[in-house]
Length: 123
Image (cartoon, rainbow, N blue to C red):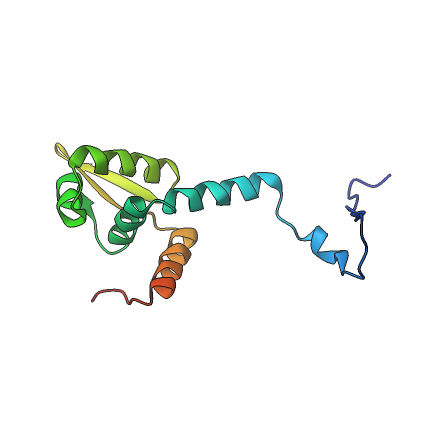
């Protein structure tokens, strides 16, 4: 028996579909990862913070002012975005600064958000 066994789906109703897509379907771990990331951006406050941090690096107090949120609320959202790998932080003295992570995924999400919202990057 070969190590490379092909998944051959058996459908309850066969309507002449091309079942080759079953071989390309992402695995469960990938689907859960993507769903988790999209869930983070499904919250309007986190989406606003993420979009902002795609354009600049900022501290919590400035993010709070720009998004009209309290600093504790912003800190909560930043923790979730950071744990999802969407943003990164750096310390400068006592101050923490946040920005979007420099990854292909983040760039794609940023571009998609701007296309959906029909907006352009500032500057």
